[in-house]
Length: 437
Image (cartoon, rainbow, N blue to C red):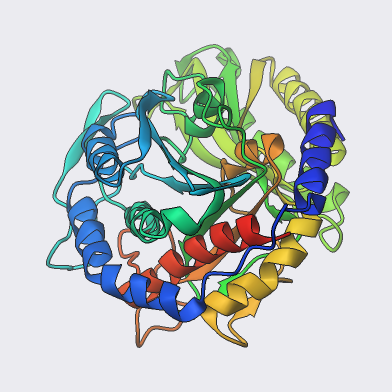
């Protein structure tokens, strides 16, 4: 455990054990539900508007403006351009107390939408120098709308809130765009999103395929650490009919892909530590009968154990160098972390389960779901502040979650019936944390 995580853990322990001068009367659930119900039409409207106007990472200028205007209308302290295009709103309650943060991500993806929705995106953006279609194929439009709705509900209860709530609207969750060294969470931290005031805890959610109205998460390692892997092979160009007169990077590339697959499958115990090492792109050559001079490969590594991850990277680099040397080529190998392990604080996870049950209803919350190999840069925020990240099932009616279009696919859609639950979960996680003696 790092010094920073030790400090964060001790901060949480103090926050959870601190007594209040006077007992806080809980805000009644039926009052919260009434406020959420009244706000739901606006949440749906925001979601559809944002869905129709998606923006890529660090280009979320319209989205950020919509968010900032709404938070200012609620009388909050608002900071913009936090981590380039991020927005932070601060709601100071009418009573003294702790500080809690709620987070939503704002960016969309370079995906051509194929949902057939009447408010489907026809937007375009620039990605890697090319004009590309842009769509909210991961549900961040719903995340922003739900947190905007929660801000409205909580602002309406400001005088009774014992403490402070920080609303974090984050850009570039999908990773640092090409040419950018860091993604949105890391940059927002650098720009002070988690200071002045510093939260005692942070909560966030993500819509995923799952029965609509269900919430699921797990303590400790929940979502994988994500590393980007880049490999550049250099050989010697030659005629395709005379491969022995050059250094064949195409064959070397094929062997490297197989080596990585075998290395992962044969040296990692999948029953104890889920690990995925995928080479997803291979770019080489311009003509069918020319063996090119260079080949570039890229992929992703998903892990749940830091020492094991470090050892696998070390061994992969050695193996790749050996394969390249066998063919007379050279290899450059680089690793960049897109997201750390999403580690849900154990004590906070146990405390949150009944709160989320209050929001979703009995039998609709699973606090012991298996880990997932997808990643989230909420992990960087919860390295600084103890936190819990949970998933909200949002599969459209009539679809099987097991076969429904997944996040990042052209057909991904969010069941709008779950939007009030997302708002309610945000509101209750913040309120009940601040009310806790």
